[in-house]
Structure formats: C-alpha cells, structure tokens
Amino acid sequence: MPTTVKIKDDLDLEKIRISGQCFRVTHLENDVFRLIAGDKVLFIKDVGDGKFEVSCTPSEWESFWAQYLDLARDYSGIRKRAQGKNDFIDGAMEYGEGLRILAQDPWEMLITFIISQRKNMPAIASAVELISQRFGDAIDVSGDASVTEFLEEHGCEDAACDLHAFPRPEQLAGASEKDLRDCSLGYRAPYIHETAQQVVSGELDLGALAALSDVDLFEQLQKAHGVGAKVANCVCLFGYGRTSQVPIDVWIARAIDEECEGVDPFAQYGEDAGVMQQYVFFLMTDRNRKLKGPK
DNA sequence: CACCAGGTATACG
DNA sequence: CGTATACATGGT
Image (cartoon, rainbow, N blue to C red; front, side):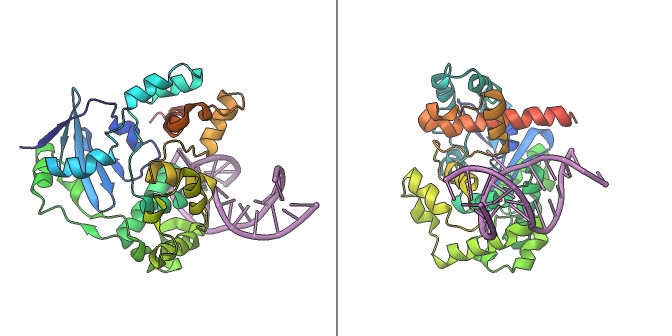
C-alpha cells in the first residue's frame, strides 16, 4: 500500500519546482515530482482533493518531509492576513498560491546560492547537479521498499537511477579548484573551495549560527568569500527559515522599480516579508518565462 | 551571435 | 561613505 498524506494548506509542486528556491526538484512523467534534499529523495504525486501519494513511510514523512515542506506554517492564513496592504503584492499572492518556503539545509543553501550569482535558473540547476554527480554520495533506493513500490505503480523507475546526494562539506573541501571549475562554476570555484574549507575547519559553524538573531546571522554569513547581502539573505530565508529576510535580486529590484514606484513594499509585512518576496519573485520570473518562451 | 543571468570583490573618489 | 568595473560560463 502506497503512503497517502492529506495536506489542507497551499501546496503546488510545479510552482515550487520553478520558484528559484530549490534546484533539485524534477517534474517526471505522470505528474510525479522528485525532490532531492541533502542525501534524501522523495517521489510525490498530487492526486487531488488535498491528497498526495508519497514514496516514503508515514514515519519518514512525519520526521523529515512534512517539516521540509514547511507544513506547520499556515500559508493560506498568511495570505489572508497580508491581503489589502498593497495591490501589487495582493496580485502576486494570488498568482503564487501554492508556493511555500522549503526548510532546506543551510550548507546546501550556502553553496547553491553562491553558485547562483549571475546565472539563470537552468544554469544553477545544472551546476548543482554537476557537483552532486561528481562529489556527492550515490543514493541507492533499490533496497527501499516504499520507493520501489511507488515507482513501479507510477511507471517512472528510470527517475531513481544515478541519483547523488548534495556533497557534504568535506567532499567539496577535498575537491581541487580545477575540479570545481569543471562543473561550470567559473569564478565562483574559489569561493566554494574556501567556504567549504571554512566549514570543515569549524571556522564557519553553520549549526551554531542557527542560534543567532536575524541581523547577526545575516552579518556572519557575509564573512564567507563570495557571500554578499543577496546570497546571505537567501541562506537566511531558505536555509534558516528567517521569513522576515528579503533577498533583493534583479527581479525584486525590477518589481520595486517598475511596479511599486521605487518604494520597497516588503517592510510592512514584518515576519512574513520573505514569503511576500517569494510570491513577487515567482510572479516576475513566471511572467518573463511566458513572455519569452511559451514553449 | 549578442545579451543576460536570484551578485560580489575590489578599486577607486 | 557611494559608484564603476571585472568576472566565467551557459541559456535563450
């Protein structure tokens, strides 16, 4: 019997896949999605009526994936409470209904968003996949009964082959700068090399940073080479769940400039500002996607 | 084949 | 303090 879970709140897997916060979510055949987080993989399918079939046991769902999907947070409630302050944000919230802020791993976010600078989203996903393939541990699901059963039922066995975990700090620290460059990291290779070594040496203790205030966390993260305000904010928001943090990239800057007459609308949303940022980012990038390539 | 991409470090004034 | 520029490489 496959595991089925019931989710009352917003959850749109396709929107999350293209939302720019995660780069290892794949849309497979038959509307099955594959999520890789650290060394874990989940296959999940929306079967309607708030029900989702998943490839893990109920226990794995409760102990990891429910938290990863941030199911304890009430996004429809957040949208309702935020409604009415700003017309543009109201529209973005409606457009992005189903988005959530995933509770991802700080280390994975730090490296992923160092990679992200001056790359478009497909290029980021490609580079993340390359370092995972080259330096991450292989993930073998062949012995996992709940996974194999799920894959067989939905006819997507191929999607469980050749999977690799995101590399651990020591695996990237052990990679030479040239090996990293071969993963199309360009000038970011030394940033990643240095950062990995700082994490391995304990000079940068990502676990300990979780105890810091938003402001202190934001400041400490920027001590890593290649981490400025924007990347630090992404790590705060996506890696440490600091939902008041608002990463400002080209798309958010464009939204403030062109849609809000140059006035930053996010401040008035307090602890939910980062969630609003995610809705706006999705609106701007999805609009652009439809504009240029209605593939 | 230009132009752009979820920016940042560095060098200026 | 603020502003200008180089930066590697792939997607469109």
